[in-house]
Amino acid sequence: MISVVLTLKLLLILASGVVNLPSKLLESFIGAWILDRTEDELDVNQYGALKGRSTTHALVDMVHHWHKALAVDEGQSVRAVFIDFAEAFDHVDHSILV
Image (cartoon, rainbow, N blue to C red; front, side, top):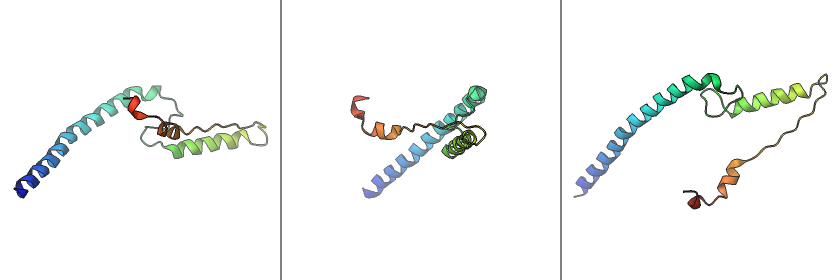
């Protein structure tokens, strides 16, 4: 009896992986297709959700602009506002959103 249960569990695990593989492949193809058609319309300052761009790139770009603005010959000031949206979403009752 135990071997039958283990065999069924193993089959379920394997089946979920097999079903998941086509959906992941389809998601990859559709994502690449959409990105190919919309890449020219994206803002050059878009750093999230793109391959090869990260928050590190955003921070380096931000520091570059700050350094440029604060240069002696520019005489500009820098103002920044940082909002932690993750903290805000942690306090939302998610049961009412569904």
